[in-house]
Length: 381
Image (cartoon, rainbow, N blue to C red; front, side, top):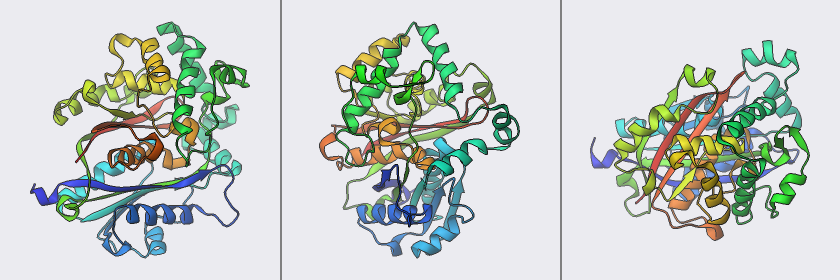
């Protein structure tokens, strides 16, 4: 691979998340807006884009090609991804390989959904065949109960308290207060967390990711086409679909399979990472993924939580989905957009000093735990 074909990220954007989208707002319009904003952030025009990757639950009956037409794109490469929280990193992996192979020069990756109450109800009741045919008829509406059981198991094994998980929500809210695009920015204390209604013990309201509407996008291009700009390099990227992790106790993800090899390929180790964004549909998944990445030595989760709450450890610096909101498939791209924004130095009041970032994806919860996990290690150039 020539230096000219090295793939880099040069732009990122997030269409502001909202709980109550305007009546004229559609999934397609939000995706198109995020694409235009990311392309502008990259210093490019729509005419410069020759590749498109899209993930969305609610774009149907339209597809990626319909979105391309809506945006006025002329493409040589196109894909759709259906893997939920794993979609962002998965699409990045495909886009990087496409640029490296010369299949496209500049690819925009987009994800998003218009997620009203009815949209969310339909999604969780018809998520896939297993959910539609077996889980929903049994009266289980959504994943809260399943992750409540997982949190109980994690709490018991590692002798943690409810406040340990609450501290994650509080710490991420502190970051969200600095993010004008986060839906929930009002400061929150542990007392506020404990006073919130119980959803499924031990999960309270602020343990459960709030569905919102919105869209995200990043731009990937050849390094030689961005020689005059700050860029972000992908040092390593990979994923795992492992049935053993899906059917196990849920206390590990597929990251355990891939992280050691990706650290080795990247030439860095967990202690070198300045910023980490992990998929945070529930606080327990933050802790599990941090451990899978090798960022919780000796499984000392109490120390990790203390570091997040009291020492501003840069974990999910956007506020994560727990405070910014989960905009459907955009949740899989949210952490990647935040890492790119931080590494490009565009994060405003929440900007941290970071050269190296790790981003994870976790998704496709069927009737048990996530079947997909992936990660990328990024470097500011």
